[in-house]
Amino acid sequence: MTREEYGQAYQKCFNMTVRFLVSRGLNYDTAQETAQAAWAKGWERLGQLRDPSMVLTWMNSIALNIHRSYIRREPLLQALPEISTAPRVNLAAIDVRRILKCCKRNDRVVLQRHYLEGYKVQEIAKQQGWTETAVRIRLLRARRTVGKRLVRRPLIPRLLAARPVNAAAGN
Image (cartoon, rainbow, N blue to C red; front, side):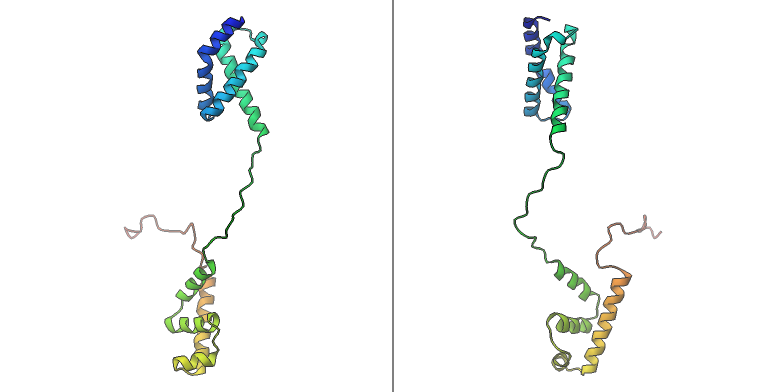
C-alpha cells in the first residue's frame, strides 16, 4: 500500500474506527484519540500491512490493542474522596425509639426518666405518685421486655424476611 492510498483509507475509514471503539464502550472523545493514535501507529508500520484491502480491520485491531494496553496500565481501584462532614443521622436515637416502642406506656416513662434523663427511683416515684417498689418493678419489667425483644427479634430489620408468596389469598 502506498502512502497516498493510506491517506485515502484514513479519510474514508477513520470515522469507522471511531464508531468501532464507541461500540466497544469508549466515550466519543476517547475513541477519537485512540483512533488517531492507531492510525498514526499504522502509518509508522505501513510496511507490515500484508493485504491493503484489510486496512480497516488492521486499524481496528491496532486501536483495540491500544485501548486494552491503556486499561491494563490504568489503576483498577480509585481512592474514595474524604467525607468532609459526618452523617447527620442520629442512629442512637433511632435505636432508643425502637427499644422504647416495645414497652408499655408506664414502663416506657420509667425507662426514659431513669436511664435517659438520669432521675433516681425516689424522684420518679414522687413525680408519678407511685411507691418506690412500684417504680423498681416497672423498671424490672421494662428491662425484661426489652431483653426478650432483643433476643427474640433483633431491632435491625431483616432484609430477607420470609414472607408467604400469596399472603392475600390466605395461603
